[in-house]
Image (cartoon, rainbow, N blue to C red; front, top):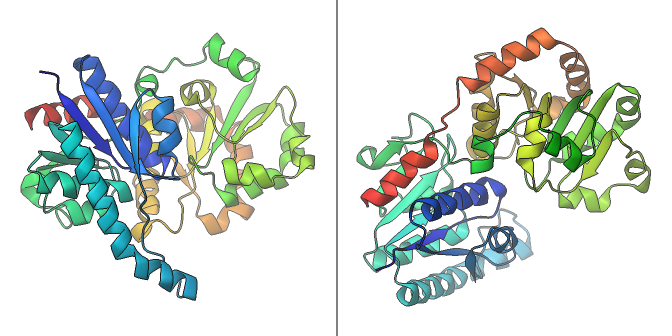
Length: 367
């Protein structure tokens, strides 16, 4: 009989890409496995999951609005009904699909799907990417059978006996990355004889990083370097024609990079947010990095992620509020300091956990 797997969660690339990595590992090891995703309508997973070749069911679900406005209050008053309907649809989906296990990766949809799985006595596992867990996984912790984590000291949030430290699942193409490949240079239309800086503020972009790069684009154009700048869709839609006109054979401005392994592979320096997935991927890639944590992450966990590396001289940390004054000078210095970049590259590789996906798959099999 074919094994069936539910994978649920999303909202950001930090949830979706680990979920797809888990699905790909399952298909590699169990080729006839049937996999169904459950996500939130209107979120990124509803496009990225089908693009990866998997079916997905969307729930009409959202989270708490922290605004004290009338709109925010009305939004929250409707939330219990929204949660009930999403739970009901998730339960109907599971009854029809009959999975052997339900896997959650965080995000609103994951809460409904795994609560439904628990009520149907289906084995459950969650994968927590961050050093400070999201609200969904904290709520689910008491119900699920196993919790795969990437950081130490999470006993404060999860039952100790359920925790397994596996690391974060990273896309196979990142694990098997080819540095400085001709194919990657051709993909971006860049020159392999010039140094390349990659700007990536996460799947949704990063406003402060984008504004800083935009304000220095003329100076960057005069430097003997290449730039791949992922702005995120929102900033790209508002970017001025004057900035877009600065693109040439050395400056590439895009809303989203599909072939991130190519971008990582040719980058000599990376400027990035400090989400858990970004940290995991950067550690495996081993490229010097400047980290700008998202300041509104829960319990400021991105700063904690970045500080763990900065304290070991494995990356540079610049706070969001310091970007306008400090990012460009540091970027300009580092791209020309080969010895410092070599040291950063060696140190960041010490944080890599390349066997994470194998460990998570084994926990899934065990359940």
